[in-house]
Length: 322
Image (cartoon, rainbow, N blue to C red):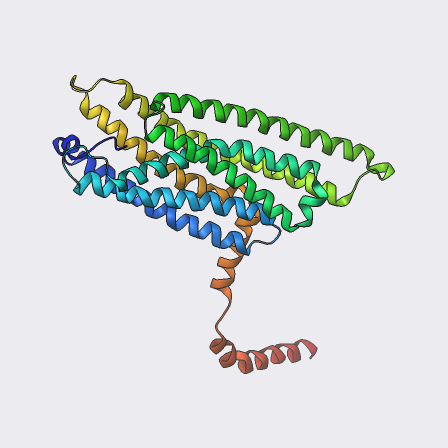
């Protein structure tokens, strides 16, 4: 449930205090960045409602995870010296494993969503209420898988290393389906371009296929920093799990456990923060809103200077006509 407790960390002051402080900074950054991305995401025109919902629920789960980390860190620093399994720690562990399982399974469901958007493009693009039901079904399946895996891990029905293998298989399967859907959309687009001369394509369908390709490319770009920031924690975890206790390397084991959690918080910041850079319309909205806020003068300034500016304008105009 809880990798380390005070009897473990008190011997290494102030190393863990520094790690906890850094993680707390990243937790705050994650909450701030997620709010900014979600706020401007709502203001960005042209984003399909299903995409907005997907981004919102993914960010929401990340925020819940980093928030529960504060509870666990409080216990690790101020809680009992001995090992305990309290309700708040069990809850924090369930949220963490649910978060990891959800993100590992998300690749497959993103691919499934784009596959449906390719095959049932007219229904998907119509924005009918049934599309919301389809999204809700995806979320129910996602959380069913994620919570089930979290329960098995937290209550030791499967070992932690077995869970790592499970995540690897899930990600590999999802990536394979993702690649298949991506290549299928590219092939459909090529075929539609060939048939464009004899009007064998629909403008709406073309738009949907193009949007699929753009989104899949965006997901691919987001996956790059995600992989980079997720490799270290899964390198730290085996060190804690495989190195035996009480053989002189406890400091390394506990350090690896702390860095595992720290890196997950860092990953949340990096991935959420990368979304505007890999989704141009979102970045354009952020820039335009920021520029408008800075450049638009106040009404008091306009009312005060309208008469003077008007007189100056007409004076210059008169001089030009002379």
